[in-house]
Length: 298
Image (cartoon, rainbow, N blue to C red; front, side, top):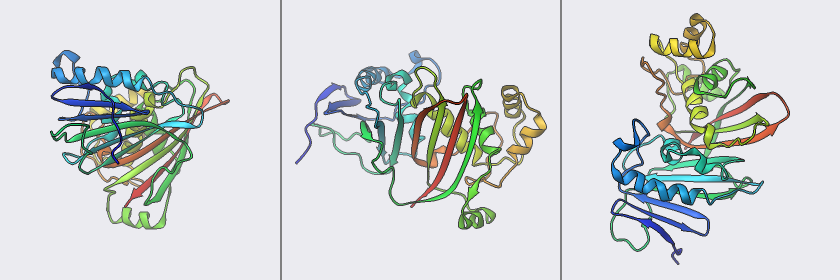
């Protein structure tokens, strides 16, 4: 028996359904990365995003819930957290639904059919609230874990998360150490993050997800010759020596994603991340504390 859908918005480029707390979006093209001005985008993007944001703002978690988001397409491997959250271009749309955390998933498969449509939409994304206690993922192996802290004065940016990660003590399992020594890079992985944050007003996971996951993915690379422009950016942000930054760029002891070519901007291979979880819990300490697990996905 097919589930009933309530279509709340549609055009030749999208179909949006909101039924029983499950928001589903079908599109002909993937939601684009927010580079440049909104006025530079194709008109269908904002026509799609406006009703999507409105639907997302209707989701509000209980204490034991978080938001689960999924992206299904066969067209390309994508930075899934970008498509599902960042490319919506208004993270406050998720303020009430991601207060306790979030989960995201990417599946390389044929999307489900949209309601009452014969046309094929190659991109599908969905959002719903789930209990925290539900399993995050099946068929994975924990291959690495580490912890780090950031002071209250730091509002965690990509540079901060990368720096905390590369200075942490990583626990890698024996098999992964052997593969790392042979230069075998991870092709598909997932990340779980337990973030304990100072009791700041209005904290929510979508506000942090891109910077946290990009910082972790960047720490899973090494650069033989880091670009001078990128080194200067990191040094300027962290207020540390250029020597120490260059040394950390060249560390390959936990470079599970292998070597990255020199670029003036961060560009980690986070398109290989097919699932992620970011849990948020307030603490009484004046610092951020992160516990990170890297999972190999079968």
